[in-house]
Structure formats: C-alpha cells, structure tokens
Image 1: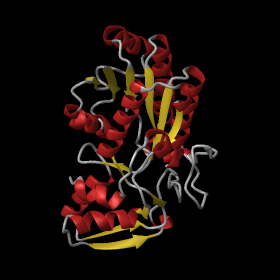
Image 2 (image 1 turned 180 degrees about the vertical axis):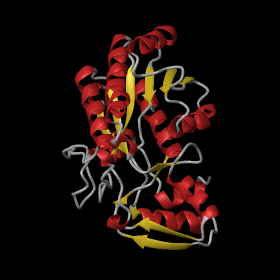
Image 3 (image 1 turned 90 degrees about the horizontal axis):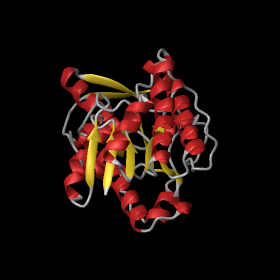
Length: 285
C-alpha cells in the first residue's frame, strides 16, 4: 500500500515519519512542501502520476492563526485552493484523501462538546480558510476523511508545549490565558489514528464511513492548565499566572470553548482515546 503524505516537515508529518517503521506493509512517501506544493495543481498531478498512491494524508496547511489575519490570500491559497487541488487529483487517481482540519472552524460559543453535525462558523481567517478547504473537498471527491482536531503539540515543529518550555528557560514568570477551553492533542496519537483509519478502510472499504470526524485526546483544560501540567511534568519551577483573554489581545479571535465530541470516530473505527494528561506524560519535548 502506498500512502503519500504532503507537508511532511510539519509536526504531524514528522510524527507520521516517527511511527512509520511500525507499519512495514506500508510504503510511505513523505513529500515536503518544497517538493510538492499543493497550491500547484500540475505539481500534484505529476506526483500522483508518478507514485499512484492509494491514500493521501494532507498535513500541509497554513497554521499561523494571527498572521493569517494579515495574509488572508496566502492562507486561502494553501488551506482552501490546496485542499481542492488534492481532492481533484485524488478523484483522478481514485485515491482516498485524509485531510486535517481544526476546531477553529467553530465560533466557540457552545457550552458542550462540538459534534460533526454542529454548524461551522469561524471567527477568523485561519478557521474560515480551513472551512473553505473542507467544503471544497466535500464538493469535489466523495472518498475523503476530514479529521478535525485541536491544540496539536509534539516533540516536533513549533507548538505550545515547545514554546512554554523555551519561555521557561528564558523567564522567571509567565502569564497564560485561562478562559479558553479545549483539548490538547498529541500529534503522534493523531498520526496513529490516521493510520488506523487507513488500515480499516483498506481492509473493509465502505462508502458509509467517508466524511467528517472529530479527534483529540480526552478531557479538557484551559491554556493555563495545559501550561501548568507541562511545567509540572518537566519539574520546572516558574511563576505562572492565569490571565483572561482580554489581558492578552491577539489579531485573531480564538474560540472560548472548542472541545470536540469524539463518539463518532470511536464507534466507527473502534479507537481508544488516551487522556490528554497521560499522553503529555508519555510524549515529552
């Protein structure tokens, strides 16, 4: 089985590379954005023509949430046009597409975990362009799995955990927002789930399984509680202060609540999901 992975130098792409040896039956093709630019339709078509993958995992994305507010065209090009290009090429080559989306497609006004059926209503450019990518895929190619996830971190790339560890080495005190609630997701756990979906689909293909799924680790916390746990696990002493969102203004508005309901992915694929604290303890930077 051939799986082509776009954006392979990002943290999810690197997490897939980290676990690839566990699946000798799979031929992974890891394509960094410098070699496969998903915004270039002909480049996508050439790669698919050469490798003929059965599955494509799209981890390429514009994820700079605040920068997207001043670079909306660039975010749209990668997150929407890029997703559409891949869907078109996947259709041409009968390749199943796995696409990573985000909790930022929601406005955060709900008080209970978001299901796959809840209305997407992003408040910022990043979430809006990711939503546009989802729609483009749905309208282009039915053989897709769109995985919405949240607060992704790992030992790879740039993420909240690594930022906290770096700042703790530079400062004696930190202030972190405590009124935005969500769920941290370890990228290695997410990578493992993507492979599980592919193996299940490959063994028992059914059109009924295609569509949108939520995935994150279990539980919920604020960014402040996430930071607290990172420092506790790493035995770091620092003066950590909780602050409201109003005390840390950013160009992009964040969802106040973006916990994802994961019943669907558990039921369809029989996935056991680890608590975010347990996963954080197992995966350190």
